[in-house]
Length: 77
Image (cartoon, rainbow, N blue to C red):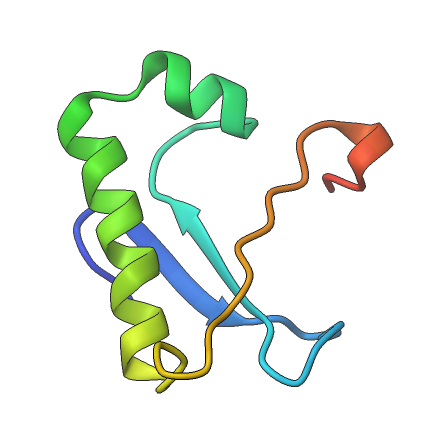
């Protein structure tokens, strides 16, 4: 799944039955970096992509979690 502002793909080592990574396109090194430096359009586009992926995977009816690992202590790789 892709759009102008994000790329989404299934995790190669899933930690849940449905484990999809959605990352903003660009040279961002962390969530803090992205939210501090991205334009309003890029930030909105990223979150719209998250919602689109959830809808496409049929997750809206039952619900889903959104997690972000920020920094080495949180497991960001």
